[in-house]
Amino acid sequence: MEVKQRLHLIFYRLRYKVQEWKLKLSQRYEDLDKKGREKLTIMVIPHTDRKTINFVISYKAISIFIGIMVVLLVISAVNVLSHSGSIHQLTELNLTNKDFIRQSSKMKEEVNSLHETIQYYYDRISNLYIKLGGDPSRVSKGMGGQAGQFLALQGTPQTDITDESFRIKEDIHNLKLSSELSEEIIKLIKKRKSIIKNTPSIWPTKGYVLFPYGKYISPITGKEEYNRGLDIGSFPGAEVIATAPGLVFDTGYSPATGYYVKISHRFGWKTIYSNLDRIRVKKNEKLSKGDILGYVGKSPENPIYHLHYEVHVGTQALNPFSFLNQIQE
Picture 1: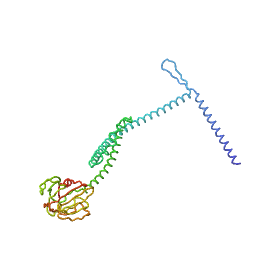
Picture 2: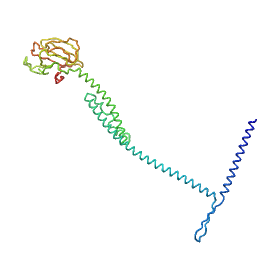
Picture 3: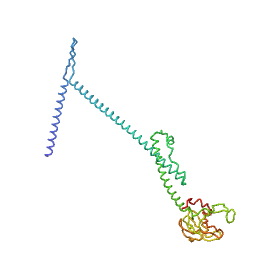
Picture 4: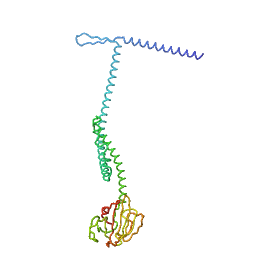
């Protein structure tokens, strides 16, 4: 009950305060309105005989006029400050634009330099790839020279930015393709290295060419004969070595050839060494390049000390001189 009475008391007090404030505001308004209705006379007295001019104006009108002038001054000040800020922003934008143009020009020069380097690298890689027997169709550029055609088809105007964009895309494509070609080149070189390693490419013995591959006049019969290999003149007992790594698949002796050794190599190569004085290898024995397989001798039908050397691919005899190093150690 006491709480309710206290609340009623607070309510009445607040109500009294509000009425008091309303009364004061009303009184203040009446005073201002009364003050505003008061008149002010402005007299203009000329120095001549002209009539004096009187202006009667209320304080309320003067207050309104002053208020309007203050508002106009504030609006003008805001406009001036806004205009100054716009000019400052335009100046900064102009400076930023000039800096952007300089940076763009510098970047364009760097992009052009990078493009030339990539183009040089790509040309060298592609030429090497083709020389090693690679597929020429893989060397064709995927995007080179297509920027203008693409833009024309799309109806897009060709600008410096679009040119640079397509040039960068072309460089990325060429770098990727160069990387792929480099891997292919490594594979081709390894394959070539393996082929060269297993190709008969050294002299089987030290000496000189006695009778070349092909047709020649035999000093024994005096007739023209066909030499399927190469006769290398040397001194008796000179070492004969394997010209490539391989497997001995046949050895033997005949009056026409003397002792002989036949070796099979990788990739279908075969070499034959005959007119030997003696041999030091056995059938099915593996030999490395440079291993000694026998010694130079002569046969009953040919008394000249020399080595008869043949190179075959399958059943086809080839000119051994084409595979030999031109300089002997």
